[in-house]
Length: 235
Image 1: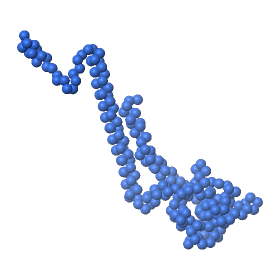
Image 2: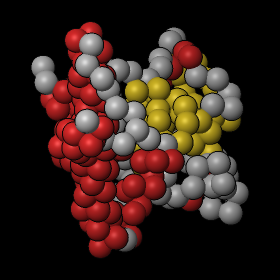
Image 3: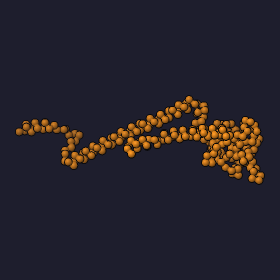
Image 4: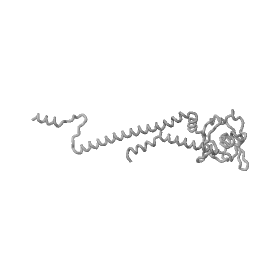
């Protein structure tokens, strides 16, 4: 592998290039995830985790409206009072029927292995009383783990500032490419300088071995013609 190929290979692994690739991958996965959820009406699961978007302010200020949150799949018997859970509601209202709700567990009841959870949103202004329809264990999606601020920020940017988002997508690869090109050029210059220094050192060593006189920078060069004329004058 040549030095240029080595530099090129290393350049592809720069932090900026990696970050951009990860961002694009996350966006693709998120789009596919949302499309699947919209078509099936179900929350997809990856390695035991799901991502859910909060569309109402019922959990403010803990979970702001529009946030994406990470949900861990658990069994109903693992749920505890105080947990925030996501479940498919039994509310027959056409606006929410069959959709997911993410609320806090107030109490738990169990009968012959069938769990029922009384839930309520944290926002007392929008949810002053517990939910009218408790969450059944078999309708449980999982337990809230954490908010996904980077995903929320990216999606919000695309939803509310699409021109800016497109400009950023175009600018980021240009910046990354420019940085790679500059670093590659600097690396080539360094390699060229090292090569020249190595060749000069090799030539000096060869001259020393042959017994040739090596002029120093402050020693003037002697013209053979001038040397001959001086010898004739001495005669």
